[in-house]
Amino acid sequence: MRAGCFSAGHSPSHGATQDRWFGTFAHPAHLQAMIPARRQVKVAIILAAVFTAFLALVAGAFPASWLKGLAERKLSAELARPVTIAALERESPFSFTPILRVKGVDIPQAKWAGPGKLASIASLRVRVAVLPAIFGRANPQVLSAGRSRSISCAMPTSA
Image 1: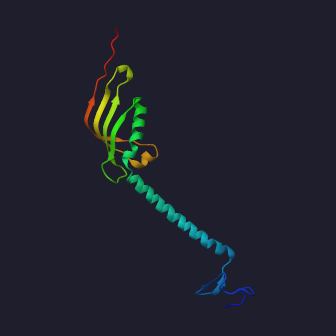
Image 2: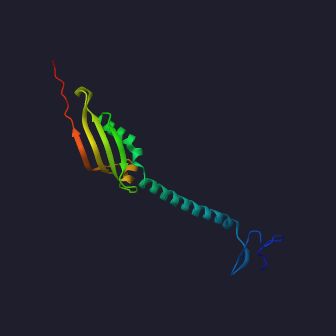
Image 3: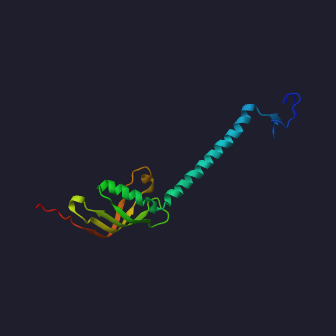
């Protein structure tokens, strides 16, 4: 042990480090405080990376059936009619641009046109990019429509 490394009455085990080249020496207080801070930063970075990976997995495998109500509300607001969707499901279990199968879309006529449906679509295949949709910029692409049926409006007659 070198002279002057420790003050009188302190043993080398308290606040000291055994170094290969310089022997036993005491760390200054600010260096001892930085060591846990560096560890906390590393742990925070690792946790942030794990959380980001988890969010990416959730976004890629999000159950489309949870979006059925949202799709009905958005379409109803856009068309000013109560649109109903029978089912909404994913074709692939994991994708950031999933193909969704929309079944049983019914759009009623305007009240002034009388009872009936403006359109009834048996099935649609739609591709949606997940990441833009999360930020409110969904731009679905219709890939195919099966057994669509439009019903003409019955115009009221004046008496």
